[in-house]
Length: 339
Image (cartoon, rainbow, N blue to C red; front, side, top):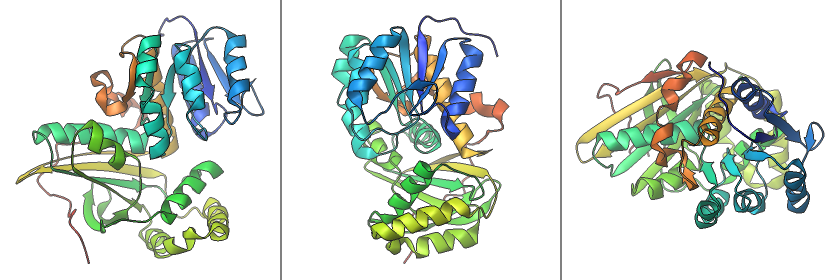
């Protein structure tokens, strides 16, 4: 891939982790010598729980153009520090109230000439982009159903596993499981899971009903995980489940995402399949950061699906083993309730 020339440096926070290391390496190919890996113990020392120290680090470095957050801060102060300084932000966070808090900084970011991109990754991220395609195909959806299949054999860091366990602990709401045809994986039973994309898309696309469902590539492990989700409501059990899931690797590393949009009797569906969800999350973040640094995106705070310049990311990932499927034949997912 050709080298991109741009001034300033990119600071990858969490740059030594499973996602951050790939972000750092990929950006370094495009911006040689202009990428800094940051963390609590190696490289540039930063701690997202200490905003004052984080701000001093930005001031000391002096030439940081963009910050890529591969770890999730406890609040929005890090985002505010970056954006009010005119520093671009790419955030792979997936917690709805934090995303809402950063989105509320739109005016401050635009005034400072900074761009922030939220919902960056696989889910949210690629799911949002597929949802936007499906929504457009039906002329504005009344309902969108998102399905995420994750490889249960992939190894994730403790924070990612804990986030998943905490998601199991949240109320499932009124949505029910659905049988969904997934390219390369047959028809699977997917169950509601609180990914942030379903929260975000109601606002960005104006779709009144959005539901995200999840399953694992191992049908047996999917059944076990959702059968014990009530146990995750207890803090001690969450700790035990987090430790157990980090040690259990049944299945492979393939993943898939699918978006179904409906408007009356109109239906459109798109899907993506690939391998190593953490790596692909990192690649989505890297492509997004590249667009930010080359001035392809407007100032202000935006979710990924709101930016036409990023709509082609699924096709850009083809060289990395991600395959786009769609529009799919009219074999709609059964997104209705199952009792």
